[in-house]
Length: 214
Image (cartoon, rainbow, N blue to C red; front, side, top):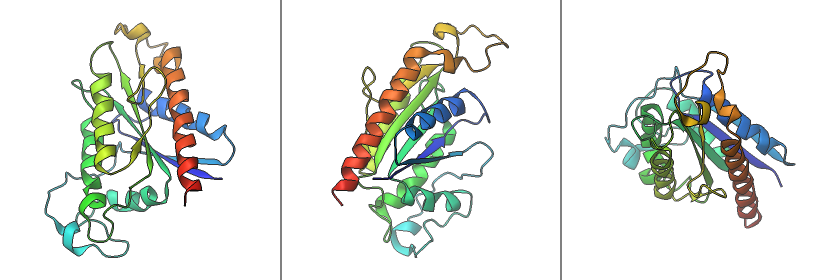
């Protein structure tokens, strides 16, 4: 049974550690038979803040989700066609990035929308976070994403050793040491990579189980 996973990179830095972590995780998903993946980088896209104007509560039409005309319009249909979402964020000030927060706020159209309300229900969600230092907020960043999944009525997946999702560190040992020769230190964090492998395995397993119920 095929499973489609959509990854969202919530970093403002193109081709950075968060993107590499997400890409690596999606490649591991593709190692399982019948899994299709794609990903979207929010960097460089125009995603306005949700205004809570309640247009979506009353005026949604087929193919029109939100009153705001920006790059979310092309993302909404791809969310609908996915069985599972992987949301990846860098850790900023102990929480998820502003880019990903704006994106998640705009998913209000799938909570209260007169036509698309509940459209994310029973899709599987996986959270990924990349921190620079140890103990600076990977858990709270992951929890913010998982809280969104619950509000969207999605099913959050956890991983062995990291119940909120998966997290990795982008500096050597999480010490903050920087080296130009180690541009993608996140891919050297063995524990972080294992947690991502565990997470995506759980995401695929849950998504397949839910598909079988249809």
